[in-house]
Image 1 (cartoon, rainbow, N blue to C red):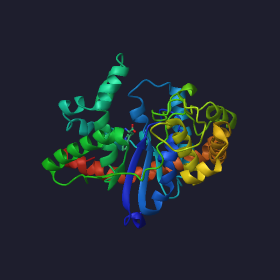
Image 2: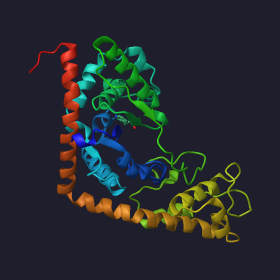
Image 3: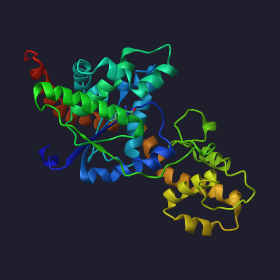
Length: 337
Ligand code: TRP
């Protein structure tokens, strides 16, 4: 374990709340493969966080494993990354409790995600939803990471994590390392195929113009064939984000998949119109996703393999987490076991 000490540590949680989309793959996950060369990376499936909104037990269990399988299929090498399931490492819940006592009501009330989710789940505004950020702070601080890569929507939570850590350190000395924000290398920003001014979301509904990593080739082709292009009559593959957002989005996807520049794409489809362009993008996506889907499907059938991964991961994670938790328990005045 000591050999990884020289690398800076990075940690991120992934909520098993939906399937991965083409957008999250091209925008982020695709770049995670190389991260392991530079950083000591910890990734966990945030099932404790998932139950802050009601979950069907069987599907939560399935999605947690599917998510793990999909990330591995996308190139997260379990030999080089620590992959685990949050609920398997009991220190998360334990430090989460302690940090609840160092998170202020006012701070938690101001979180935009809490406000949004309370509005959406008015019949289930539970304590877990409210203290979600204290648990997230525990997730992070347990591992003393140097960096926490998160998207825009989670920045506020990472800032609160800093506040909580500084408050705790202020009372007890330097217990927690304050992680730096990490701005991930941004991949392509992929929009919905039917509403190209909105980001592609992992909605259940196909009509929202999303493509899932696990979609069958026919489904992907159908999605691309009915992708919105433009209301103009130009019928010409040309990059103009302002006036032709649908075509621009398809070009972004095609470019991300094939590595071709916009100029090259314009030349390739000069004179052929959208009728030929849309299925070409679809086919490129199908071919890129095929090995990922096949590998994830294969892994899902190999429960023994997945178990081996998440057990090893939890063991490695607990080793690190326990050190921090023990220090915290001592600092706050708990009697040693
Ligand atoms: N809240 C994050 C999300 O919704 C998931 C998450 C939980 C997380 N714990 C974390 C991310 C710790 C980074 C670090 O995306």
